[in-house]
Image 1 (cartoon, rainbow over the protein chains, first blue to last red):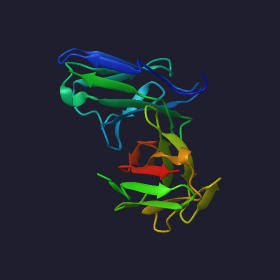
Image 2 (cartoon, each protein chain N blue to C red; image 1 turned 30 degrees about the horizontal axis):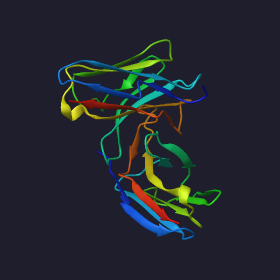
Image 3 (spheres, each protein chain N blue to C red; image 1 turned 30 degrees about the vertical axis):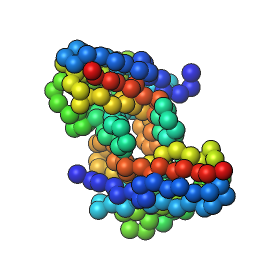
Image 4 (cartoon, rainbow over the protein chains, first blue to last red; image 1 turned 45 degrees about the horizontal axis):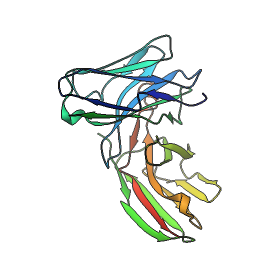
Length: 112
Length: 115
């Protein structure tokens, strides 16, 4: 498709389990971003990729969060030992190296 | 860190009315963006502003990049039911090529339009 694709769209997991969230950016977009949106809140920056490297990881809330990008395309956000406060919508966005950002529909993560 | 104050938090209007919302910041931004988010979807770009003082329209939407670079507003004229959703402002600062695209978002304005 032409837009940013995220999977799964919904994920329910038990506290303490690890989860992987996937993002397929728009073809040819060199920049990729992960944001988190908690209920009723604005978007919180997590990490930014330029190609396969991440020059800005300043938004990752703890060392349980990590992300990688391969082939300058697909990115995976991994949350280890999930906690209830990790419950949120995780949004991926891509751009051609400059604004604007184009967002996917997000993965709604629920930690029980 | 940088924070954006977006107001109002919510608005309830009648179809056909005009709407205005704004964002202010304590810091300067190089780019202002306005997004709309429908339930269960990601934010969709409405208008992008790249220059202080810039006034840009997109159909019934008009947005301006404040002269001080610390504020922006979005106006919607003659609202219709499909305008319902959450509107976010976002500001971006470039600094030597790093953190490019790292947007700071406002808290959102929830718009309800009564037919």
